[in-house]
Amino acid sequence: PEWGLWVQDWGTAPVVTQTLDNTAGTLAIDVTGSGDAAWDVQVFQDGYITLEQGKTYKLSVTVMAEADRSINIAFGYGDPYVQYARQNGNAILTTETVVEFLFTVTMPTHDVKLTFELGSQDGFADGLVTFSNVALQELDAETLIMNGNFDQMMAPWDTWYQNWGDMPTVT
Image (cartoon, rainbow, N blue to C red):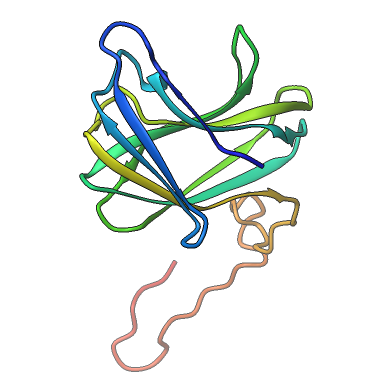
């Protein structure tokens, strides 16, 4: 699957270059100028991802930037755009950062586009943004923690406390 780059080409258009390093497994995007909106600089993959209604997914990506900044992540399709999932304001640091995005699909099953938005947004900064290790996993495992919301009294939870010397009061 190929990664695409789309950049606003009107008004105060950002200047953007990309460098793909197949050996290192990285895609570097150098952004100067933010454009008018977050979506004015997009790194995307389209035509390869199908999200199924009712399923939960985890996207993870390793990202670093020349200057601390933020990016948005979106899944959707079409024109007009139909949004399936979005996570705004992901903090990207000058050291490698793993960003994770968990979401459950409530819309009908459909092919979608994964987009990283690098344009104008709170936390925008000019400079190089480097992506690696992008992965999308379906999470279908059952929870391993019993009564994690504590709605069944204490079962199967238990307590332990010191029962010698200066004992705490436990209720």
